[in-house]
Image (cartoon, rainbow, N blue to C red; front, side, top):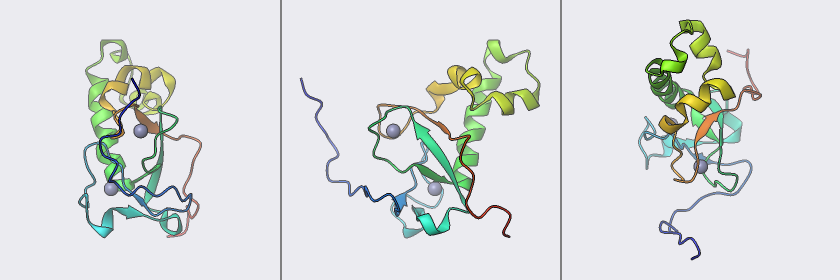
Length: 133
Ligand SMILES: [Zn+2]
Ligand SMILES: [Zn+2]
């Protein structure tokens, strides 16, 4: 059976320059339907890039920093309850969280809104305007 797209009415921009609607798994802190929840490529200084394990994910590749921090905190809490991470120091937990080692333990807490994948921080990405404050 072919997968049926239930929420086909959602206007998802396929434009590589956005704007994208923040795809924070627990909902954007700025409100789902507010213009504030939009992220544009001109303003990535306050955004964090994430990768969905679903290669055909059409959701925003960016979260607001604030939304990401809330999401990361959740993943970190999850890691703290993992017996396999018990021997890790707080610093190691944070360092390992988005590497394969840590992510394998917490991915269940990182479900993407697309419903077919899990999202993690893109460690190779850095904000284009970093340093300019
Ligand atoms: Zn957001
Ligand atoms: Zn996804």
